[in-house]
Length: 209
Image 1 (spheres, rainbow, N blue to C red):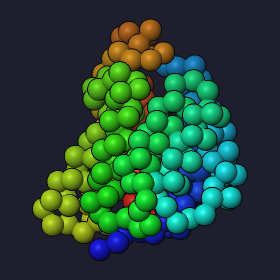
Image 2 (cartoon, rainbow, N blue to C red; image 1 turned 135 degrees about the vertical axis):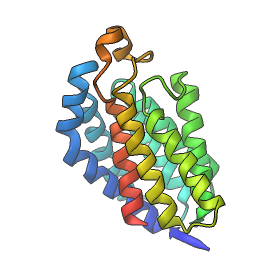
Image 3 (spheres, one colour; image 1 turned 180 degrees about the vertical axis):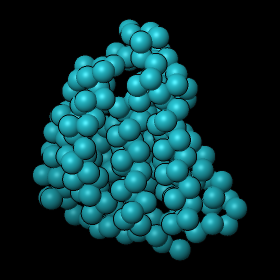
Image 4 (cartoon, rainbow, N blue to C red; image 1 turned 90 degrees about the horizontal axis):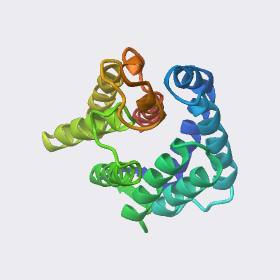
């Protein structure tokens, strides 16, 4: 059973753009502590460009919408987050190419492809104080929920809870990837900006479906 159409997916990405704009100052504040201090500003600029680009995209192919989003993020977001988020959306787009609507299983497929893209591009894995510490637990919770017979709404609630725990977990570990890794033990106690922005995107997805 379809859970969203291509037009609805486009609306969800536009809602994600608005959420990142709302949270950009907090994300930048987090990044000031352990990074370059530009995560929120850069990501908001990228999603603003996505808004403009999607306005001219026919909302018929979910894969095309995701790919367009990813390409725009890569070309307009500086720092590490542009290539990482851009690759995530592009890989999800390839996985869902040609689909006019998505089922719950497609959501899993897209998220798995996105995570795979981030791991490949960032040469990172879970437990290194990155966005994967929110996304991987969310994917696992979503899969567990759907496999056990939950509907997509209930499974997404569990996925967001898992991502929230993942963000909290990033406060307890030392960064070993990216700019924050230069701080060593001084990165302890700080939540990861990338995990936080990933949580926001997942929250929008959960609220909109």
